[in-house]
Image 1 (cartoon, rainbow, N blue to C red):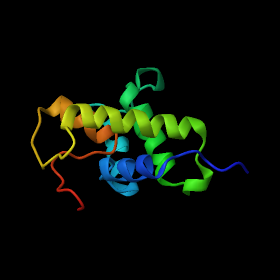
Image 2 (tube, one colour):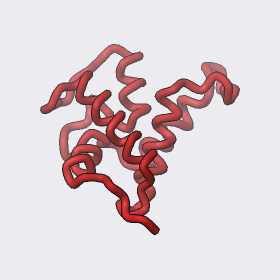
Image 3 (cartoon, helix red, strand yellow):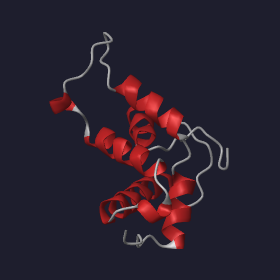
Image 4 (cartoon, one colour):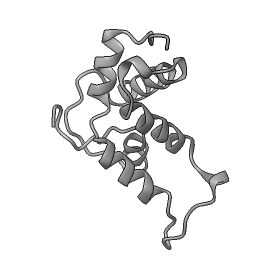
Length: 116
């Protein structure tokens, strides 16, 4: 199998930005996939950030050497999106509900302290 082309910097930054565990992200995406009444949302109405969240979940379950070019693209997208919203040194901070939900769908909980 070909070795992935993920840089040390991207690998480290992705795992810094994605501060939720696989279990936390999986649970979050499962909760988000149910509507207000507990009904499962139709697949056609899945939000783009939930698709990215599922990709992040898949990446978290892989070894670095098993990453595909699409995985690397997703990692770059997640890092850029979270850094754009949070900045380079994000301290725990409350955001409006919609923004927090989006960040959490990318695997980043803005209320979680760094390194937690």
